[in-house]
Length: 328
Image 1 (cartoon, rainbow, N blue to C red):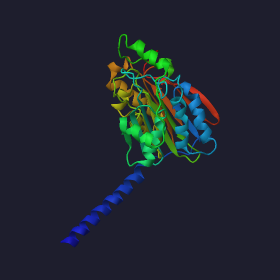
Image 2: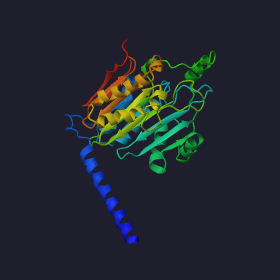
Image 3: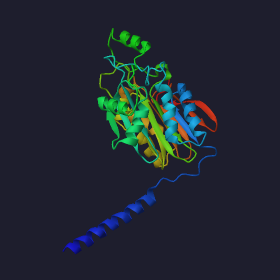
Image 4: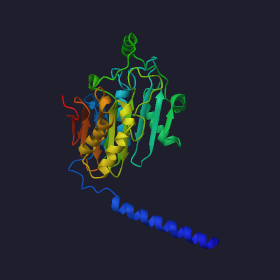
């Protein structure tokens, strides 16, 4: 009886393995050869992130690793006290706390994330260590802070005078309302493909200004704020995180590319799905996606006009104005 059971189990497992192999042989994405001078390439949300792209390109242009590039890139706005949507200088929540979210993902599908992290200027670097030094994907709040401190990060006050004054002015009415394309800047999402065609992504933010204490948006969530698949490409989002969270938008963009869509069309599909499902919310909220595929092709799309993104490719760092679902 035992030998018969073993035979049946082995036969079943063998059949499943063969079926699985056959499935993947039939369903793996097929890409043409990369476009000439396509790699390395780095794409990031929002025009003001030219400097972030330049930092990533500094790594890539020397034959460096895509994961190092995206970390170096997004650390630029994280350390900028004038950037009110990311890291140091980010606007606080309604209780006056600057809480940060970030995630990072490498070419092997490994990922790290931190959320509701206070007092640490570079949450992206903490997220990378979560990926590399723990068995987990995500650490939050005080646990994320304690881990960061244990890894040698310095505890700092991230509330700048500019951000504090903005918070004090907001408290007069204490009304939360998302504002579309404020200063044409928001969460930074970045995807890079290096000269060895390894894909990595990163996303980091201080979240919605004057949010409820404890609120977390899409940025630290793998598949929402950012997602990469080394067989296909990568995508990242910006805007009102709740709408991206409800649709796992970056994952959707990558899956559309897996099915053969150009990155531009894939981003459009994700935005249109949000617009169809949450039409009323879209009247006053922005969401944008960027995407790049294994050929080095890229695209971006948003709900409202005004979203732009930056691409460093072929030695040129350039801002692109995104098309949008709603016209001006």
